[in-house]
Length: 131
Image (cartoon, rainbow, N blue to C red; front, top):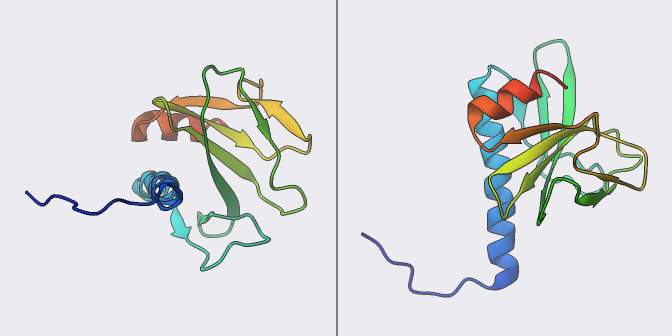
């Protein structure tokens, strides 16, 4: 079995983990039949994933957070970007939250309009269909 013999710088390692969560969401959405598009560059638009069912398109931002509980407060980093949904993956646990994009400066993860999911395809898709 191959062994990685070099150290990955901390910033690079975090970028790899964040990208892995984006790819996980892409995979789950594709399994559900969505057309998935990945912007070459999302600077300014805050769109990590663009999905379509044919006639409709939705912009999704993927965020990872360290959270000790579901009342963890997240900041709005996508104002004026036309994002439709934000998926928060809790990277130090095995759950996440799907949220309609909100206008407030910040909001707790356990807000009533958010859908919590365990980090599995079936759980994610079940909650995604409820937003």
